Image 1 (tube, rainbow, N blue to C red):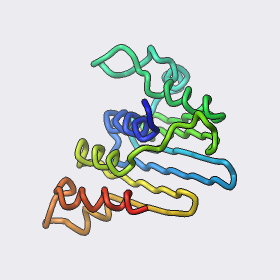
Image 2 (cartoon, one colour):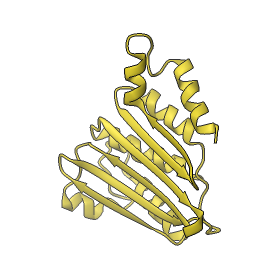
Image 3 (cartoon, rainbow, N blue to C red):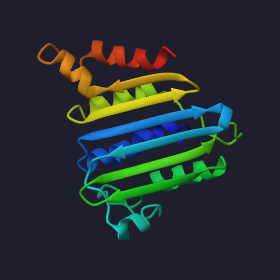
Image 4 (cartoon, rainbow, N blue to C red):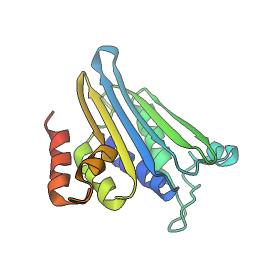
Length: 175
């Protein structure tokens, strides 16, 4: 995966497959403290301690469509290559949180990528799921909460309406 937004896409797709109805994505860049952090939290079915201890192994997956689960192991490798780490916490029935921290100025830190397009892909792929995405890029803050959008457009349009998706994309490309 060339950019971090693809890792976000992969992790959130895992969350929606695990029955999440709410996924929160937090992205922070603090150049002054040389910090780049991603945090993805969901309210899906979570993992027990046994699965949690094995989830970083690329040959462990709950998917039935393939035998490997490279997403988390590749994100962990990307974080370590950029002087950071990956932390995963989970509780059965309560959800999972994945946090990846990188040195912001590390030469091997992958670029963030297109968060607007990532959010659109997630919304179109799982319109029944609510997403919160908060980005703080050196003080430039962007926030999206699909619950607010759905409440605003209730009955008038769908969250997957092209005009709504364009507004979401523009929100993330304005900064």
